[in-house]
Image (tube, rainbow, N blue to C red; front, side, top):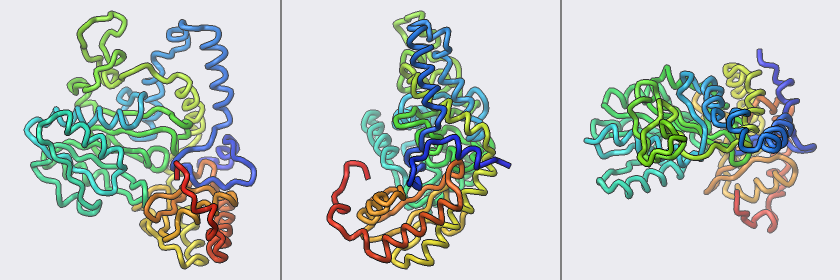
Length: 397
């Protein structure tokens, strides 16, 4: 069994804070400070540019990608790190559309994270081939899968409510209709077991600053199934995706397999921080993480509903149907969340009325949950949120 007391000790958690926002930004792994220091002093400082060879910086994106692969059920050698999640969405969608040139429909859902939809809209405009983005309600996606669909592009876990799509069933249905499938794992990687290979996914993308604790701005990843790896054409044909970057050929030739999905210079220091976080993940079994996550979320739901009737559960009640977060609706959700944060319980707010709480067993336990419930009860029962300073919207909510 995973020793969650041991993993909790490996994170810096500020005194007096119950951190229920690791679904948005994971806390600092203590070892990351020394790991980044080493990368700066021993590698960048002493090796200078020779670090690309001597410290293995050039291979870092695929080396770290293989460590991510273990957590998302991907085959070794088919995940690479780099750039942002938006860029990886664009790469995956452009490649998939090119593989279905006779189809014009991109199917997503109205619960998808906006950046995925924005990237699709931008790509549609750039291609100028009359593609259409369709976004039915999440529960209606299956009914819209048809032979007109080129690509099904979904986020497995809804960022607002935590509702979870059935990856295997929807992928099978899309493939039966001749469509390709892209899964966004932003709220899945590190939150629940994922089996990209077993589900037959074509592409997957995700970020590493949430449950994987890579730090603010940590790089994204992209997965390409082995059956596609040698034939996808990268729309963003960057220097480091070239078959021979240091040949300085004026014409682009795609690299082998997943290497072709690299674009720009890897963020070495951010990847160093992520490597430190993955050392903690090496101590964890995803089945244990999932079991404990469901237990913590259930405990929180039971506790809140017993003392806060003004809050309405927005997440699925069945733990198997949600990710590792719990969301409640409240008309005054923003000031209520600010009042909680002022009292050391950190969650976040998503418009229009969602109070969102993330549960990461690597550093959250039952004692934390019970303490958080007590604070929420105090804030709600005594209307402590009803103050002008809590209504002032910050840039980041």
